[in-house]
Length: 227
Image (cartoon, rainbow, N blue to C red; front, side, top):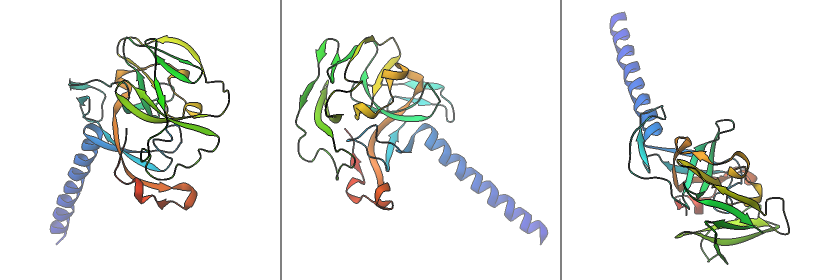
């Protein structure tokens, strides 16, 4: 009887460990989710969103490492990426605004890439899924970065982040910023990030809860595509 129980326990434990290993390996190298605790990417991503991260968007890595086995693409301007902060190693969600070789600057709240001022326009209806919390006192607009239009916002009136001098993005470096321009800790503070620090591309909101309403689900944000 004891041998039978021991064999059953051993087989069960091995099965559980195998399942855990497969799931964690999948999340490490193929796809994962990332909970968003701050509003640095509003009005595109809200606090309480759980976003889907495609880790195969650019390359294939050995699970649980940053060692790249092969690469088939690179982050492009406008991509929303998940990356490790070069300051403390925490995972951040930001938008790529400058790729290797670009010169990035801001002049009076307008993003300038390679001496070209990005186009700004009123936000089209339906761009944002659900009500946008915490936008009082902000201006929301559509910014066209290359071929990718997306929502962004700034505070009314002058701020300390309205302008910064031109920054040349080095090889294998990327300049990232939050869509909530005045409340984002990004490359304006810690500089461009290396290619190895980018985990993958955020493509959609998998699920969402509202921290201001007792974490009730925001059903309209479930499976909302990010752009």
